[in-house]
Amino acid sequence: MQLENVNVKYRERARMGSQGVTALSEVSIAVSKGEKVGVIGSNGAGKSTLLRVMAGVVKPDAGTCNDEGMSVSLLSLSAGFDPELSGARNIVMHGMLVGLSRSQAIARVPEVTAMTGLGEAIHRRVSTYSSGMRARLCFWTAIRMQPDLMLIDEVLSVGDQEFRAQSRAAIFDLMEGEGTVVVASHNLSFVSRLCDRVIWIDKGRVRDDGPAELVIESYKLALSSAQVEETREPPRDPEQRRVLFVCGAARSGTTALARLLNTHPDIVVGIERFKYRLLGAQDEIDYASLFTRERFFSYEPGDTNIDFNNTYVNDFQRMRPKFDSAMYVGDKIPGLYKRFRFLGETFPHCKVIFIVRDPMLVAASWESRAADADDGWPEHRGYVQAVEEWNRSLAYALKGRRILRQDLICVSYERTFDSRRHAVLRELGKTLELDNPWNRNSKHFLWKASDRARRSRVVSEEVREYVERHADYEKYLKLIANCL
Image (cartoon, rainbow, N blue to C red; front, side, top):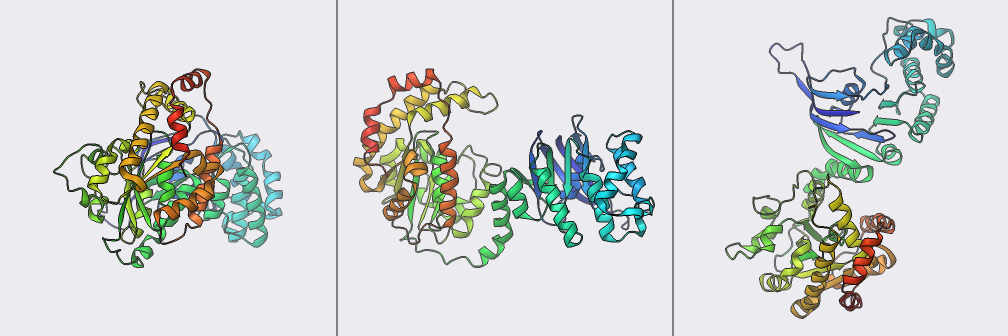
């Protein structure tokens, strides 16, 4: 199922000349076979309209919806049943609408009747049903279809206790099966438990689309952002604030480390926020102003090549409430190790964290990305270039110790995200002299990152042999000996 640039506008019939209400705007999503996708958002955000477009009930005003030949069933307690027809005739009509023959649709009536418990009432008009009876009819008619794609629109909180228990069990079975399911719900714990991916709809647009835990976390943060802003701590004395940088060879875990640091209430680290400003010496720049609130959250040409509005917008939402009171404000730029002397002279008493990772994994990551035509990683930057940069970064790190001394903190990726993660976290807190302890978010993030780190990347024999011959393991051992 694929939607591209879908727009839906509802007309307001009661108001002459009204421009209507935009329900969906420029929505583009794709759902693959077997996916379990949650759709979240506030009331009126466009969740139900999105599902109705996918089901073919609503035709987009613009854009396309391609079901790719899939059979689709929409489970919604507010759509699709004719109140003037009997329950039985609605079951038949629903079956024929989703592709069954008339005889196949009629054959479903006894099974659905038994599931609903409606008995002889199945032959009465639906308009005579109570809300509970209608809920049972809609639910069991749709849920027993077993289509290629099941669309579920908020049905967990209706009906009596018995029906809620039965419907919840049926949906849990469906979500744990092999079918493709898209479910719109306000029940975030349900979505988090059963969906691998979540789409956040906000004012008719896709606000976020990605792993369930991350999107739900961002959604919760947005809901509480107004309250957080009101209770924000007073600004820290500028003389107490320090600048913090994170660097290392590309694909060494700099982003993971920056995100870990950002779980601490005293740290705000941008993600390649001032990449070009700091990698090139430009004397006319007021470097001290980069880490003020006005400049840090203002994206100007020449700062970076990163599209924060699409890639890291949620990270920066988390930074805003704690920015003024943070002890450290800085940036993560992998190649910044080339400018240790510049950092020491321009930002007195700054802290620089250099992360080093096993060269086999760095080289394998470069090679994997270079081989992926859709990745955007330069094709020529394979494992050979990875080893060259890795060697160069270690040489700079060893020199950096003489330049920055105790202000350069070296950490091992493997220790931080695997074997010694809790000890590293404690030592990092002591070294940075943080006011507050690491919190539950820090430990939860570290657990998830450590789980991903344990899923070892496949290293080809060609890459392995090259790394073993050309990686500077002597410098690696010298650096690792003094790493956290």
